[in-house]
Image (tube, rainbow, N blue to C red; front, side):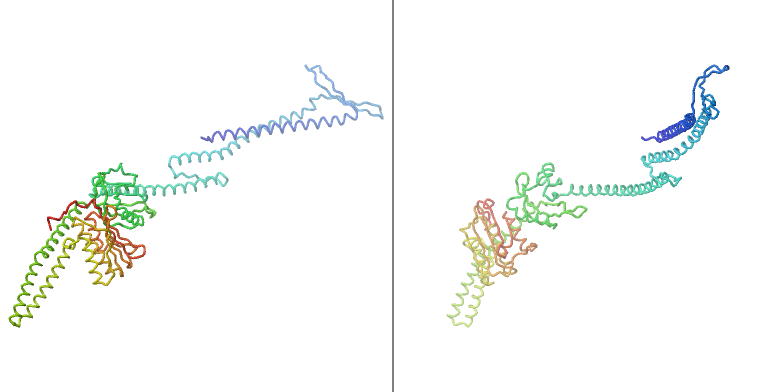
Length: 530
């Protein structure tokens, strides 16, 4: 560290050396000039006549001294006039001057040293105080100030130091306040994060968070419990492997919705667990943003609805069986009963006509009403059991649907079958029929279509049912919240079929159901119920 006292000693020493050297050089120079002036004057005079130097010792003296004789010739008298004197007597005034100069130098030195000390102290003392102030500032004391004692550079430096310290103290105060606020914010953030993490950890539904590239950043214990994968196996990775191939199209649409900042609300789909089994889930989710408002990730909740789906499927199957039973009872019991009444009525009418009774027309009217009741009963039976009650299964039921739609709505409705489609599972055939019926009804009521086509056939090992119309088509924003659409999707899930709805290439709407034959029972699962 720079020491002020070293600077002071150096200044004093430098001033003294410079002063002494200057005075010494000046006195020597003056002495030399005076001596040269005297010698030049003597030489100037002697050159006119002459001079002589010799050594001379007086009787009372112990040493010889140099003596100078100057002589001059007077031609008028032919005299030589001489005058002599010792040289040291000539130089005695110069010695006095030299002594005087030395005395002046010493006196000046004694006077200049205190002045120099005072001047150096006036420079070094404020600097030393400033250094002490800086040391205290380095220890954290920002209240230090210097008292300006002059208007020179040292005083200006003191004022600059005071202004700098005032700004530094203000910055320190604001920085301390900001650090305290940030500390409180970080504490609140940690508490909030711990609170929300505890909520997510205790949540019964699987929760998983992704960044905007689709990589996992968090998953809760419920996710591990339902799907089997642990956090160590998933963090930093994508979860493409737990999406079934037939569900990728709807999954891609959900990803696009999330990336657009929209919210997913209970979208039902399927996922694989670690063992490779299908898990039916209801997906809800939303994005979250950073403090700049930029999307940084998404939170997805996958509610396991496998048990509820199974229960709903069982309830629907029970309903279907009861409906089929009612339809069968209507077809096999009530219809024959009405047919028997119709025969008796016809016989009664014939007898009344033979007897000439006036009540014959009443009997004919009764027979007509019974016939109408028979037709209505058969229609109800076909509605309750559209597939099983017909002779050729699903294909015949769809043909009846097409004929009825064309007759009632006057829309060109057609059925195209790619080979014979035989479904031994009556429940799957019934669901397919009701999906087609709902799609056709929606097209008739809402699309403004002029033609509707139903395609049924095989694509490899998959049964594909496609309903297409040339109407105005489904909206590109796809607000698919209608009850009819939900029922169709639900029926497709009940039989393990893929379901898609999209806008046609040339307009209109295309609804497609793909049912793998591997998922169908090998026998007639409903034989005992029909």
